[in-house]
Image (cartoon, rainbow, N blue to C red; front, side, top):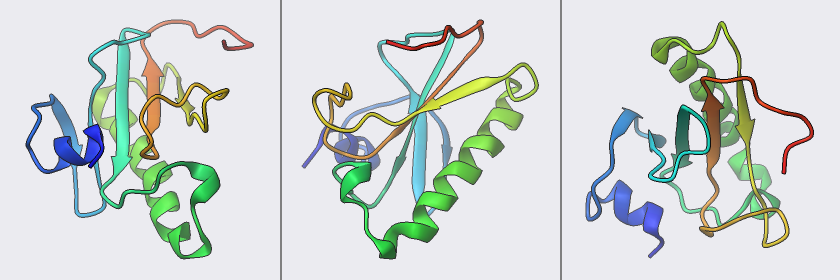
Length: 112
């Protein structure tokens, strides 16, 4: 069971800002921006490259939910970034698909 599955199961505490039947969003414990949220599907998909055709609706839900959270939390208008890491070289630290929502400052380009 991954760290994120344990958070979903409430075995590990987290500061939750949104949850529904498909996903949960909480504050990152090591924020890289003034706003750093993690949005994870309840379904344990190890990484985006392993998502299948049957995950299309869930992936769309995650993106739409990210926009909803940005509006509700008040950072949509100023702008935000969504990051999905995939694999070791992509910066993946937990093998459970998740979206980083970063906001609250001017984000540099290129990242990393």
